[in-house]
Length: 171
Image 1: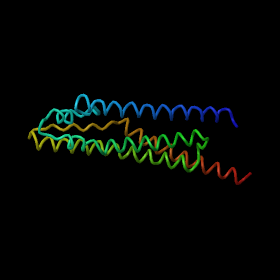
Image 2 (image 1 turned 180 degrees about the horizontal axis):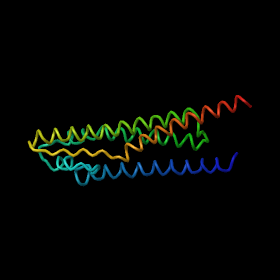
Image 3 (image 1 turned 60 degrees about the horizontal axis):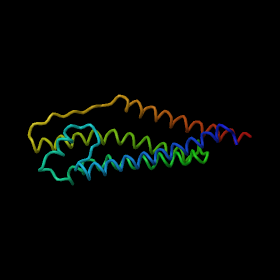
Image 4 (image 1 turned 60 degrees about the vertical axis):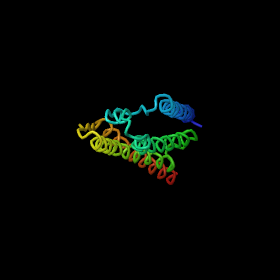
């Protein structure tokens, strides 16, 4: 087996372990913050932080705003670790790897829109409680570029897979 391929397989394994350990740390922190401080300390939305200080808002409503983001987070972790598992096995250009990557692109795109919708929903809810609300919607140019770059990579991976298949047929 090629030394570079073996090295990539080992690196993929290390990144997969790091990903799972990081996920465990983040989830532990979220649970700890909720248990100790009584709130969820994620994100940068000031209206959401203000809702955590409002006694008239139930925890179920507060948590409900973040459920879509948490689901996307966990789905993204699942597909990323699955992709790294395929890389760990040496399947860099297989259809399984490309499928995982396509899922990651869709999740990134969904996460972009879910963040916008989450901010809108929190602002409308905040306005129903307090009447006066200023809505901040930030479009991160880096996120848009990342999504476009991921789409280009999917295209390149599919092209590489087709070229590899053609080379095998030729031989």
